[in-house]
Image (cartoon, rainbow, N blue to C red; front, top):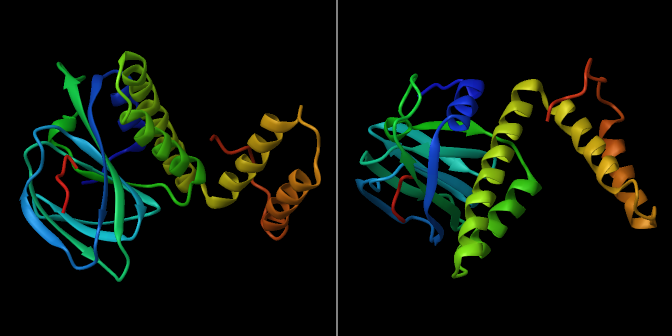
Length: 217
């Protein structure tokens, strides 16, 4: 299913939703399964390995560098491919109706290309950790963290459409802005040097880049 990123982000901005569950799976190569998705829509957020998913017959290859969204109550076929374990975070969420006009997330399946994002991987680990903790404050943190994950997914997907060079420039810029008050250590200099060397042979961009529902296999 083709979907416009700006339309999707705007839809989420105007939709009331709540996290229903956060799950972590690590599946051996060769495992497969079929059935129905959960009664909630959700995101498959890969951490390692690859798996093939079919939502209502539409195929998606899931792995680090993309994110898959599946609708509620869809037919689902899934298989781990390759020789490494398939590891991912699954986030199911409940929509507080009515949704804005345009499309319905409960009936939508689509893919977002994010590329490599260490920040997204770290946010997913933090989301999983806080989701395992009891109490009201961790529950609130889980909602906040999921929205941070969505923001990073949307930003990474936008950077993919804007081009990798702008994304790399943004990483350098963000790093400088975040740490410019810190003592400039040798390690900091080495990290920046590596990032800048990666930019050495790239063409300068014209402007600064702006920054499932499924059961386990």
